[in-house]
Image (tube, rainbow, N blue to C red; front, side, top):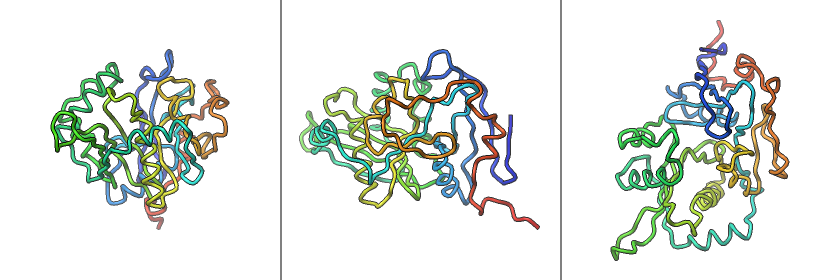
Length: 279
């Protein structure tokens, strides 16, 4: 099914499929291609309206009877560390962070496979081979970086081991964590949280106001860790809203609480440069 605005950008809807976060729910996504000379501009604009990037596609949940998937971001100037987060930062002081153009390596893929086997063995990426992994990292038409974290090798003196990595988009108003993975054997390091904490540091140094975390599902244990960051905002009912108490966020899961797809599309704002000239 295709829906379009009176603009060059066209929007489509995926077929219904089981929700990976909430049992008994069905998910659909609204998506559009990310291509052309103005891909960065489109990525910036739609990210600010709750969309996420996956390779050269931008998507947003558009489920018929549920709005539990909430796009989340951290406002950098409102963030303050908790005692637990300060411990996480201290535990990872010896890690070396390097950011470069998105280029896939065998070391990344090996870490990615180990991460999937322990955390997401039944997920949609479980069967991803090295070529698909390389496409996920490298196929981008926007400003992207692969941010890698290394620790001194415990077995080979003088060398180092990759322990975490994050594919990150650089938006005009922040950093977007597209996909991250890490060594799950190093549980005491809390690397998942550390990646977010370090991206907050990077955003602050770059004077970027936000760190985009992807989707947060309040009722999903897999997503609970995102609620532990102060300065959290969610995109809900067409605007970003400050989360003062994550425990009180109860998304609408009533069939009448979600706008029909054509109305959702009509409400999307696109940059003027993507609007065909009138004449």
